[in-house]
Amino acid sequence: MGQSVIGQIVDSIKDLIFFLQSTVSKVAYSVVVLMIIIGGIQYIMGQKDAAKKTLTAAIIGIIIILLAVVIVVSTRNLF
Image (cartoon, rainbow, N blue to C red; front, side, top):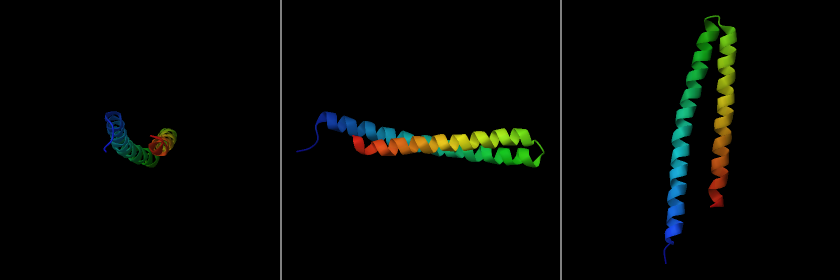
């Protein structure tokens, strides 16, 4: 016998959440790479304070992204 309707709905929601997480994290990683490049250009151009802020924001961003991925992946098996 197959899954119940509620089980199918939960599986569909899980699949949607993991698809969104994958897509959003790819976009976020792209933004972080862009920020690192911009920070490097700022550093080369002599804007060391702006570069420091940009690179710090990029590092904080990647930490937040990684934590979000860990939370989503670790909760995957709960449902």
